[in-house]
Amino acid sequence: MKKRIFVDGLSGTTGLEINERLSKYNNIEVIRINHEKRRDIKERQRILNDADLVFLCLPDEAAKESVALITNPHTKIIDASTAHRTAEGWTYGLSELSSAHKEAIRSSKRVSNPGCHATAFILSLYPLIDHKVMPEDYPVSCQSITGYSGGGKSLIEKYEVSSKNNPYTKAPRPYSLGLNHKHLKEMMMHSGLRESPVFLPIVADYYKGLATIIPIHTRLLSQKLDGRGLHMLLAEHYRNQHFVKVMPYIDKTGLMDGSINSMVYSEGCIFDGGLDITACNDTNRAEIFVMGNDEEGIAMIMTRLDNLGKGASGAAIQNMNLMLGYDEKLNL
Image (cartoon, rainbow, N blue to C red; front, side):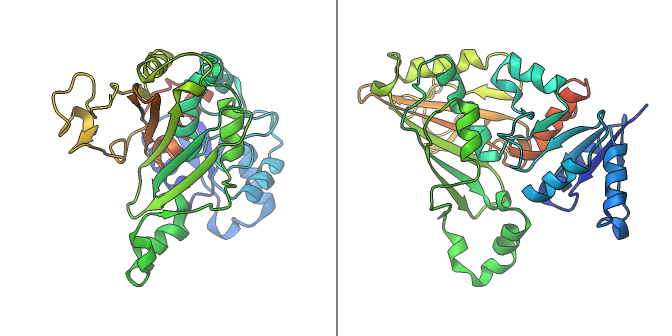
């Protein structure tokens, strides 16, 4: 029997991407609400409770309202909003962190889909804190640059339609200047940090692709690890993960292990001495880079992903696969 799936919030950026990905499944039936009845509470409640699994692609308050309408104990939920990412009774949907995280998703009926910035940030730091290499009160700072699709339809409109007469969209634009980005709580809770990071997101004039950049002063770590040591720890932690790859180490010369020059490295890593933020686009991959200058006692962890893929719809489908008992990699 086919699993019945309902995407609540189908017209949004994430909802549209999830719906497109679901079309690859022959064992799933996507159920829809009649357009004329989309604001009919009783009809929405009927469909929500008729589904085997519901994706919530809604603003936070609307997501909470939909959850309140679901009374069927067998209906599973994946919430793509920020509403439940730190809420009790919800499982955080980042399976690569540990085998326990993966098993929790498999057995859960309520999974919160991680935020795009948070995914890259947590993948970078969780192993360091979990292995007690980085103290929980380490003064973390992080910049994250992303394409404008991360802002949803309104920001896409601003960049693709209005930007001709809007010159400020042409240069990278730091935002969330009050240092209170909505991902901060989940970034702290699920990385293991006890103190808030100084987090500055930056939106730039390209459609998608995201990279977090986290500097590390190795003298402040709980264990004496240099850049290569951090790289080895991350590589071992994610060794068996299909969607998270730790890339070759980059030393102070700007060269990757195994490369012969800084101009071009395979897999879209380095070109002319720079890193391509968009190289993971249209995939469900996250790629982690460690750079180090051991003489100066500094290192940097950079994680890139597709903010609409591993940072949103790809992760949602991955979580669905786990929750429905499918191969985690199916159609990804």
